[in-house]
Image 1 (cartoon, rainbow, N blue to C red):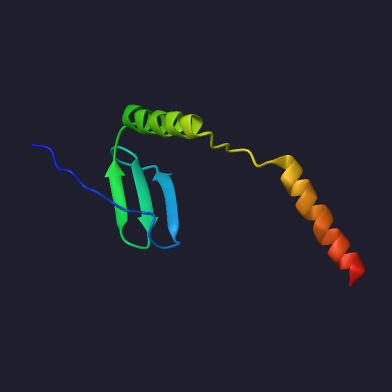
Image 2: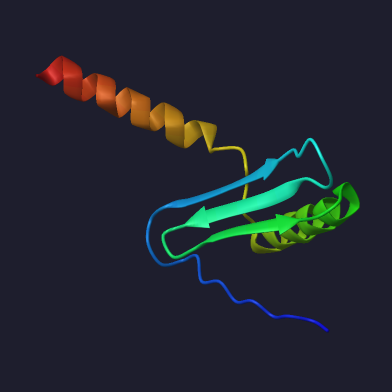
Amino acid sequence: MATEITLNATEGRHFTAKVEKQYYGSPSLVIECSVVNLTLHADDEQLAEIGEAIREHLERVGYHETPDQQQILNSELEEESHAQAD
């Protein structure tokens, strides 16, 4: 018997996700947000499948994990110029 759970994590600002290693049994994927805390016990193969699905989605939508270095540099230069002007 399958159970379906829907969680809308887009509401609120608090969101964390981590994998907690268990000293017994399978590791846990822990998702905490403003609405609810969710713990999913899964083996490494299942966690890899979840990770792969997320990675594929992020590649498809063009999301980059590494920040835009030029944007960071421009921001730092702007902050320096404001500090010197004051």
